[in-house]
Length: 476
Image (tube, rainbow, N blue to C red; front, side, top):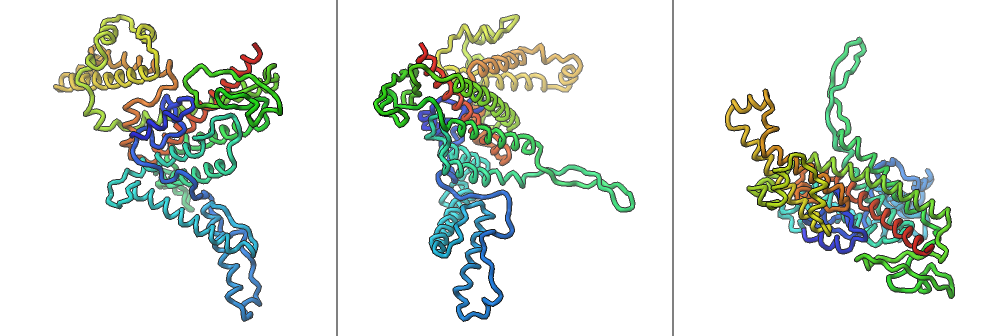
């Protein structure tokens, strides 16, 4: 859980998932324990299986009559090794006699790496083997989060992704997502026999949430990579904060460009630089289009992430630690307004609170959310004392007049407006607790995948806005 702090410090735009994004150097699943088993350079796994490698060498029938049979068997072994690599999606060595020993060494090293990574995954990141590791769902979620930090953690500019990191992202995500191929559900299907009889049989199909959300996330992933690849020949460049563009790699010899000083606290980010006259109309239009596209991707990923989190069960640990009184948690000022107002206006309440920082907004969100569940629990207890009360609830819907029910409903509305006003808000304590205690592997993959894509989309939008701000300043 302490890993998330390092993540936040290195994030370029402070994006957090759930209404939040994942910062780029996070090494946990939003305050979940353990480290990734797939971070760094890792093995690859292709989700399509090839029966025979195209690199295997043909064997002449006369070769079996040769006296040098040991040497003739070498190409066969080499081709079989490449078939293994093809099925695993790893780099296939070149079919050259001079490079065979080097390629075999590469194969052996990648297979050793594969064994190590899968061993860590199966052990739940507990290298002692004592069974004290985290569950599979948390391990895979950590792996996706840390893979994102490895690939995109140092990418702070609008530029194409490094080819090696792009290949790493694709092959390791294919490996992690391949688990979803085996997560199925059974559904009745009508089968027609030869005599015309219709029988109902149970057939397996991909689980509905994975069948709907996973292809959408993969499409969003591809679109984000394409957006980054589109910035290969730009009219802007980057320089370190406080430096001259003459020292920048994109500057012309002997040129001098003014750098727009950043007024926020993200001093570690490179500063975009443009020519004194600003960007051309074509470049500005391209930036605006990509910003709008990335913004839509961000909204789509955020919607998927929110829906997956909403479907996760609330851990008993969270319910056990709820405050006994919602009024004590929120404070008298907020409680009195929520209780006494005839027409509750969450926007007016937020304006009166004058929240000045993201930390204050997150703290308020945690208090409102915990108070909401406290009041809901009290409402359920107050209407489950006798069977007569249950009958009255069904007949007259008396729970809506209950004070606890009204407060819980208003707290939910306030929480929704708070997250709408601060879309970069990091995950609340409940979201973090859900991820930490989640045991569903499919939901863990969907949540972490949507979270990292949400973070990347948010970052791209922020980078584009920085360039447009530099263009606007240069024109003035």
